[in-house]
Image (cartoon, rainbow, N blue to C red; front, side, top):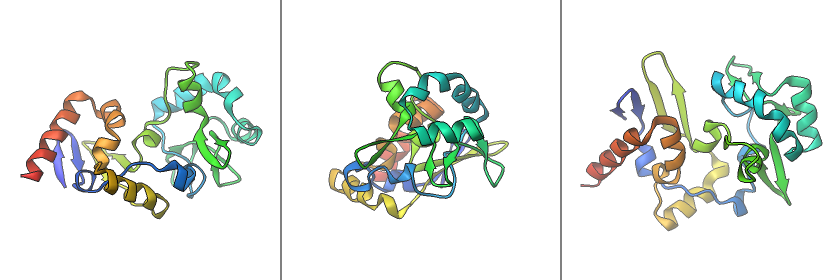
Length: 188
């Protein structure tokens, strides 16, 4: 672990390799697990505002879950998160054949909205936990992502480079530039 501004960062994000391999995992991170995607208070407001524009992209089961539970929920641990369909799929997941994709991101890709998706989804496999004085930035190892780890090793892409856009979105360009300096120093 090392400190970077007001973050405590796991060295794993510099040392481990990762590139999503949707052809292998089929978007399992959107349908497996025991909770929805973590959200910030600001993101809950964004979801409420964009839902009418995202709704046409969603499956009927997702729409039903959102209309029954809301565009976001308080999880069992009290954290804010996306609602689930039958305690499994994220309510915002859609399918291209057997592959899970984000309905929010599809609306974004088509220029309907200007918000890509929750930053926790965009950052994955990095998980950020906010505390009063700092945030922890950790690599989340999940066996469903083994194909992504293998592809990342094959292509020699460390986690932090794979999620560069999301890290910049979360922490800013200056923070990411400092992270790159730490990564270069660690290679020496």
